[in-house]
Length: 391
Image 1 (cartoon, rainbow, N blue to C red):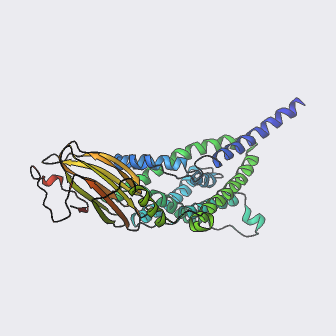
Image 2 (cartoon, rainbow, N blue to C red):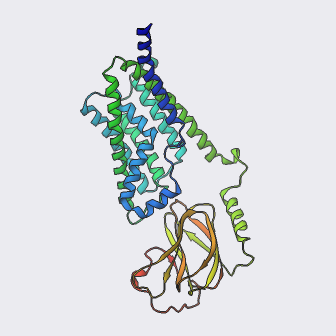
Image 3 (cartoon, one colour):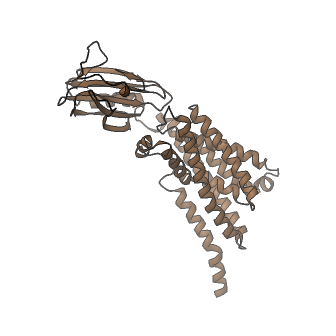
């Protein structure tokens, strides 16, 4: 009895551990694997290419669908040459579409592409179980070709998520490459851990059972992820069938009505258009100690914005930011601490133009009408904005 108990403990404890690991991962809060918080988006704007690299590494380490696929690739590989060959094929595949799709602003619905990625996990596990011969009585497709092809799909998923970030138009290619380098760093880090886990089990007589259970669990996990992503896709593709909420355009009108009601009268109403993947500024001149009220709202799409002021006569390029965020609207009152231009910089990271309605009230002078604004001294050439500006 004691001998049987020891044998059962040895055999089933790893199984329970594996099942527990999959359940924890599968039902973690980050159910869709690639979410980006607004705090991360804001931090990346000022972090430069190193920040993109760091985000790429952490993104891969939290992207359990990509990691599950890599885990399936290396499962039965026993020598370094084979591991390097197949992992390189996957790396080339996802790097090509990550760079090309992001650079050319090619996007797909992220729920749909993640659903296909989930199926790729099922595919690699089914292949590991020799499912094509056992259940379909056919030879499996060429593994190298399939890994390269599925890598292209994984790269498109990474690109779709990367395009949700505030990418710099001036350093777009460097941002993408930095993110991709981070992806590879994260992948290599995870790969080392995976190889250690597999090597540990490979030395025991339990490995055959371990491999069978693990690959079936990969199929189950991939199938559940597929259903979850398709559920999300149905909600985005057919939103009217699942909710009674208003369309983005209707919501924008509601926001305008709600926010605009904060003030009884508006001195000026300005309509602006921010082109796709472009930026624009709007500024007014305000004297020190003056105050003005403002509210702006988009037609439903979020924009990154920086509400800031630039002192008159400054020759250093200094400015003061009052608020930075990514949002569909903003409102408030500003009491100025210096004379100079005050206003907004908006950045549109979508593939469509975004329309803004801006309302102002208070002590200011518009710079986009016939009125000539006299400043205490001319603004240096150094401070002229490099992006599209309405002055």
